[in-house]
Length: 129
Image (cartoon, rainbow, N blue to C red):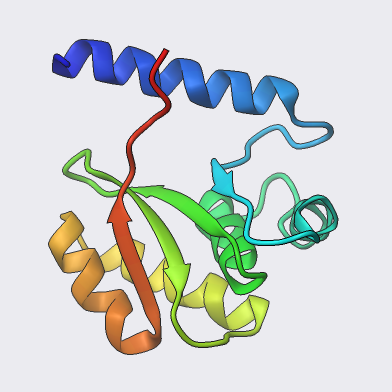
């Protein structure tokens, strides 16, 4: 798959995800980790209101703390899904993701920042059409 088709495919998947979302203007893709997915989405929307600094990373941290995977894209353009390997409360996970996101530029440096904090990442592969 070419870089351009990958970008278009990722953008289309994200647009579809946001279009299907209820009340959030910006939501990062997530992967369900259990039966509480919908209530976790709603709770994370409430604790990351529009206009909040680093909203995407904070929403991702909230969903990760709830046991789901969440998408992040690093400065180099690499896309990853983040999951927790140890339990975190929502605020701590949001802060961890924001801090690591701000200080890293590549997938490798993001992994190096998150691993000691109790998270794992894997390359995100958007759904194929």
